[in-house]
Amino acid sequence: MNVRIAGTGSALPGKILTNAELEKLVDTSDEWITTRTGIKERRIAAEGEYTSTFAAEAGRKALEMAGVKPEEIDFIILSTVTPDFPFPSTACIVQDMLGAVNATAFDLSAACSGFIFGLSVAEKYLRSGSAQKILVIGSETLTRIVDWNDRNTCVLFGDGAGAVVLEASDGDHSLLSTHTFSNGSYWNLLYQPGSGSRNPATNSRTIDEKLLYVTMEGNEVFKHAVRAMEEASVKALESNGLLPSDIALLIPHQANRRIIDATAKRLGVAPDRLFTNLHCYGNTSSASIPIALDEANRQGVIKPDSKLLLVAFGGGFAYGSALINW
Ligand code: ACO
Image 1 (cartoon, rainbow, N blue to C red):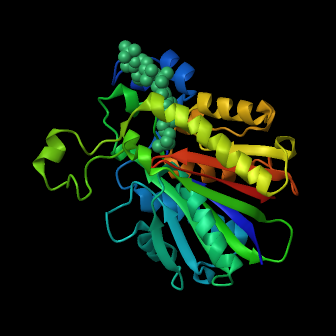
Image 2: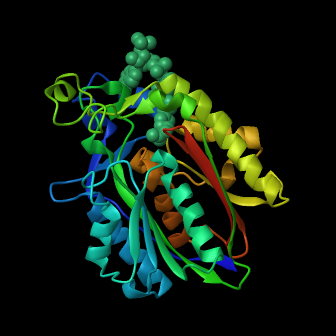
């Protein structure tokens, strides 16, 4: 049984925070942020907006495009590192919002690679015949776990969600492969120290020592990201007997323009076959690839029967790729 993407959707907060506005918050400059990251502005959740509200909006749009009713969905797989609550899963809240009454809903944690991991899990359910239609969502409200006094991290992240409806299909327009990888040796290079069982949010030390915020060794993460995204991409190409020149569009995780350019260069994918939108949204972690995929789809950038490579890297480290014949 093949697996195809039947619809895509995305949702972004209306509030924009520009580099010029960040210059008033921390000791930074538009020039530094632009040259080091490629980011010009990001979207920030307003009061009353959460990971679930973005996820439900993106999911609804994907369902509409697919012509699928919420009650037809068998699973909702939602990747996030910023759930509404530690429990229940945000996926269950989204199930309620959408009225997807027949779905089994759960969250998946693989940091910025969560959407690719979600695709991979969904693919297995669909290929085995355990499900017919699955909603895979990446949704994040990272600006709620960022220290707005720390210029090293606060300039990088943004909020939003992206979603796809995957369905079992006999056709050729399909998800050709997914590959996932983890390297837990480096878990402490990129993480949120507080709020879990080691440093509970109920402990005053967690607040006093600012453990609730994203912590990152940026330089180290950078080096690993380029190598790992190349490895995951090569695996996808080799397992499908394809060359970099066969890829019509590369949609990488949108973390840093320099990471993306270095990855594309090492792979031999020409710059005009890269899709990027991080200048508008910053790093939205597991939402970045499905947001970009939805934009590329709605803008008509993806041509039918063309090969699309998605590749991600993030905390864990967790990384992975997906190859699609659109
Ligand atoms: N404005 C001005 N100066 C800054 C800022 C800022 N916003 N942030 C850091 N600096 C300073 C640092 O303090 C440092 O100053 P110093 O030399 O006086 O100490 C200097 O800039 C250089 O810092 P570096 O960390 O060496 O800068 P680098 O070129 O590595 O860029 C960055 C930093 C952008 C974080 C880069 O390392 C990066 O993108 N790393 C990967 C991060 C990433 O992609 N994370 C996400 C991947 S996984 C996921 O998505 C969760």
